[in-house]
Image (tube, rainbow, N blue to C red):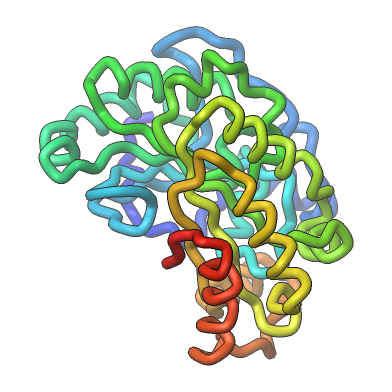
Length: 285
């Protein structure tokens, strides 16, 4: 439990338990271990963590301590961390151990107007673990943020949401057919969660990954922009340009990377998409 988890989100991590589970099952399926929820035992709750990074400036405001958890129900074609799909690919960490690490950086995180971001994978797969972390972070006066696709938003109570200062909400497509083709999951739970956050006035940044030939269609972008325009608590939209930085992990896991021949979006395409969001008065990055 005391091993260092500092590292990069781009490093491949598969534990022995994770390797054993995936050896006997289709890697794309949701494994039984991914569905198990930890019993809420306070500081002794065990979460499964891929890695954490200190000093990130791309996962919320200011400097961030970012914990990447394992377990996710989505199978995004452009996923740069397929080793986080299965919970037991991550290394076991107690809440107490995680907080010990976070406390080292609490002062600098406050000074930089940053905080703690929990990402994944999909953090809500490990709800008891993340909520213990968020509650303790708020006791330290730290800004809290979750990076989520919202697929499991129904697991979160309104009280849970009160401990999360900012949502980085990934809306991967506005078209249900494209969304399912891209993720193997339905779009509606994400839309329901976005509207719930809006109704509750919970701040959010929407992230949209621009993939040429997959999510860049004019009508698809219009649908995402229309959803965003209706979110009262939306602070900004981030257009994330597709890249090939996850390709090696797919190959190392023995998976066929479906986007291996796709180039990053051109500056012209990127600006067209940004313009579609700006046309609705949205702040776009």
